[in-house]
Image (cartoon, rainbow, N blue to C red):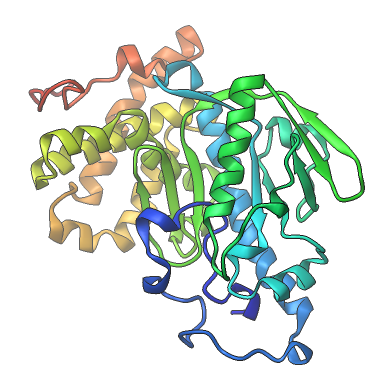
Length: 348
């Protein structure tokens, strides 16, 4: 892995809750800060390494946007969004190397513009384009601590969301003096974030966080969308809060996992994906990677999970044929009471 990515925080906001900076596994085999000779740096290789990370993040943001936008009519919490992800050189282990590798004079630049989003449709938000203003504020002037600073990027994204909520739009300025003014659309209230290391996928009620080494990044998009849909399902069904209130026993976690599995094809269908891709994901991923989960017994076996998913498909197909949508707020059978405990398990 390249020098600029040493101790790289995932391009978005995963670090604070999931992995304190000094405990995260570095993206290099070598641990800790090292002396870097700037003359010896291969900046083309650095840029390529950053680009590979951005490619994975783009894939996650594209799929996440399609799912969050396609299901906005059914989510209890929605937010205005333009589908823009920023990057801050301060979040790299070697900010000066990252700036030079990307040809930047300042720290803030475009990371991704999700496919189909207002940011992407504007054509202005190309990868690594330097940002100098978010409405009237230049985020480059905000205080940044030492290398691995992630709070400033959180502040920038929070500021964008606040402007969209309060003013119904935002003007974003670029280093060449031009400006793009965007109006948002509503999406389900979840941020999608790529973790710079690891092969885990988690949801915390507000975010879906997927490690760059998760095997599904190698799958076809509809199948990859299955894992994103599973984690989004946890958020839209309120599982994190429910577990906080009712306890995280194995029985409780298993019920929420089963609900998330079963909602996957509903979310995929509303986003324009083949809902059967949810079962294909479980078969493709589970047959190779589910052994640890089986030992914990907080999930059903992968083959059972695929069967539960498949059992949802006839109802979804009927609803899509008759109504053109799969309204899971009305038709999806819950296994937990959002305001209470467990519900009786009934077969359809």
